[in-house]
Length: 116
Image 1 (cartoon, helix red, strand yellow):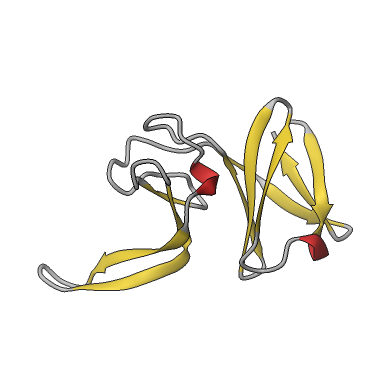
Image 2 (spheres, rainbow, N blue to C red):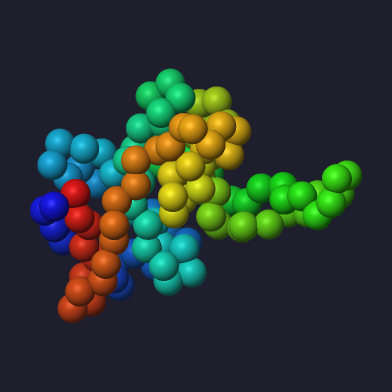
């Protein structure tokens, strides 16, 4: 794996995102409450710009008939067709066999670093 410095931690405040080009790939970097995530900016459903979509939550089951809103800031929704993906694992909520590509992110010497 190769490591790429994206930017200083201070350049990506909580709730912000940045789309960068690394090794020929468009990748979205997200700061969710001080935790950093990297997702390839390509929806596996139809190839849309996944990282341009909204980041929010989803409905979670409480029992067989009741649902509550949860996982706020952890679900990335494709702007083209609304497919939802877990920002950490890349797993699609509609079909667990489908995943968006994710990349490991670390903070080193106050710099955001992605491994590809």
